[in-house]
Image (tube, rainbow, N blue to C red; front, side, top):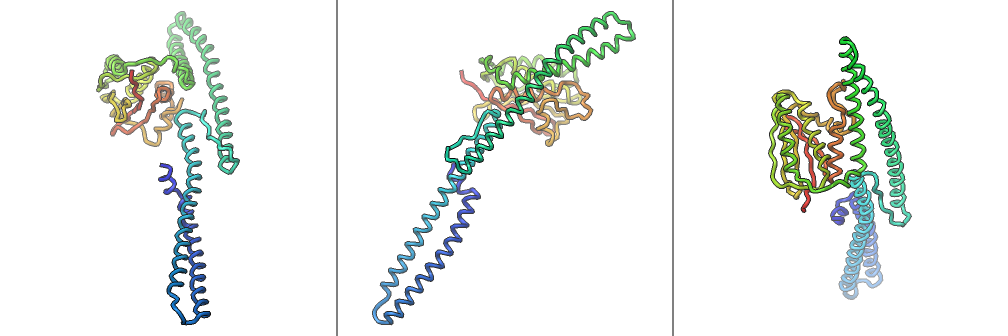
Length: 356
């Protein structure tokens, strides 16, 4: 694999260009030496004797030198390029690991103190700084969610007491204020759940989960919910699919996906819940609909916390649902992708299966 990448690399192509230029120079020098030697011998010896043996010996020596130089130059190009590509692949592998699992990965150093080690040190220092800043931002958001949740809860309780004893003209306004506070509290709760999931502490509660049975239960519960919203929920679920995970979090993941599909689609939409086994012995869980979908340019943003694609931000929900789905999938070693359902949107969860 590394040899194939070496031969395809731009560094190897540059090395071949350098070898070609070097070869032309060497060929010119060897031609000059060859013809000069032949001319010198003929000038000294003249036409007496047979020069073919000497000429053949010179040609053989020149050919041997040329082949040897080409082989050595090719080996040097491969070795030098292989070393460069190897270091680049280390950086690429670390980058992929960071994208998959977080900022705790670092590029390994070889102790050579060369330019590649200096690049790796600078990148590691940059990752350290980013990790520190991300931790500070996350800590601030967690603190805000914790600190504001308590006074908002107390405010809601006071409003409820006022609502119970207020005159009729005020009850409507107090009721709407309570609803607004419930929306804010649900957002803070979602943020706190997201923070706990991203910390990975929920792995301690992992156990054997029958995903097939869990999805059938949720499909049975949410079929009437979809019907009340003038939509249809259909389920296609294979039997005996198990994984190691946190059952409440998996329920939260699927519920968020179903509610997202039911809430943000027009009447008569068909919502499909499908569970199948992947070719690589993994699990494919799809929550798809034939509604309006999400534009391809907005799908990455839709997975970020507190991002809503409606400019007015007046729709239902906290704006954390899909971000929480993504975090729960990654906690279980999987991933979430937003795909085109032609028409509509498909939430595709790829999860690793477990054998018990």
